[in-house]
Length: 312
Ligand SMILES: [Zn+2]
Image (cartoon, rainbow, N blue to C red; front, side, top):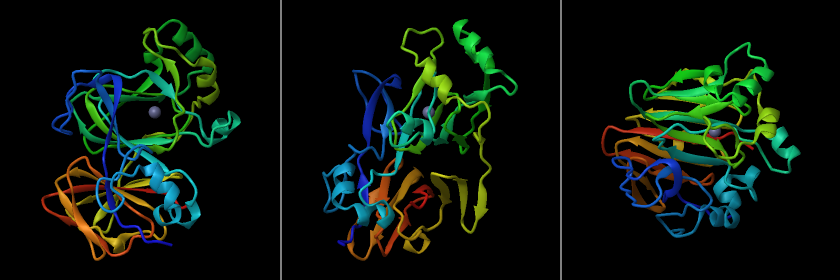
């Protein structure tokens, strides 16, 4: 097996009606066209920006170097997690994602469980997460018909640094005022349940089939372990926060691909067998499962978010 060294991925900007025309100071990106709402960091169309794989897409790299990139247990599979930064300028529609079992019933490989880490939040920022306890399903139906579903949603205030778990089956909506780092199962399955009376298409039957009134969703309490915090450690992903400390191959998990995202500061990825490269705020590097002898060298007060899929 050919060794694969760490590399940076170029972000991929997706137009969304609810986004911004100018993403500064997060990204040096302005457009006169349709606004940008999502920046995909590990989409299959994102391409390597450094090293010998430069220019190849994550999909091509996953196909050509499956075991070296993803580990023996995931060779031949898609890249396991989709990481994005969300920039909502307006409130998004109310949605629900199916779990694995429901997705597979409709011929899809997997459902979509996700989490949001707040990179920033203005005072008053909130997300809708779940239906108020005790609400019967029929009442949800009636509220949609009468364009008043907001009344039944649980509003969760968001502060910078919060980690919010969004279990599959949770009715949810993102509001304006926060910039969120989203980690999710690689899946596109979203059912729109409610759009505040706006005219976009709804997927009511599937929404109700996917909806669960009791879920594990909510704000997570970080767990401090030596030198870092575990923000969430769940069935599909583990997300950690490293502040001003060195992260290196000594902290790696065996045979698992890792992603490092820079939330604050600037640093350099170095190793014995590859050209060092820089990582700036909001950039992401992939550390292949087979990579050895690498370390992150901090150039300023930094906050690094490390994202790992759970072992296959
Ligand atoms: Zn979602």
